[in-house]
Length: 175
Image (tube, rainbow, N blue to C red):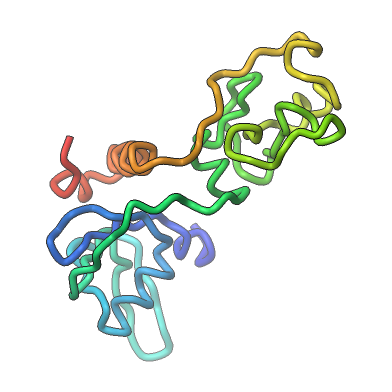
């Protein structure tokens, strides 16, 4: 695993109260720990080396000061659409790396389709080319699920799903 991949491993972020509030990349988690904003509660087995030292990347970090988290909505972005759709093409149901996915406007932009949570879905290149500037019905394609905005429920579900891959997260996620 290259250093780029290591620094992009998911890390569970806990509030000072141990409540899970987010997932971030290992690089960001490491910066928060080194700045003294967070402490590492669990470490992965992945080593990181600097010029003078080496240590394990955090797997779970906890903020040292409690942060009030408002009921916010996530910003509309390619990354968040892919997260919401779990890196799965919403037409052929294949799970793919982000570089092999694009975003599809369910109602095409050429027909005044908006760039919104409800109109954007993860889509592989072959399905996007097949659909073209038609609606799914016109192209004879069916969506895996109706696109919805990213919600707190979606975020918690993703944390649980990622937690299944990292046993160190399980004791912090309330199933």
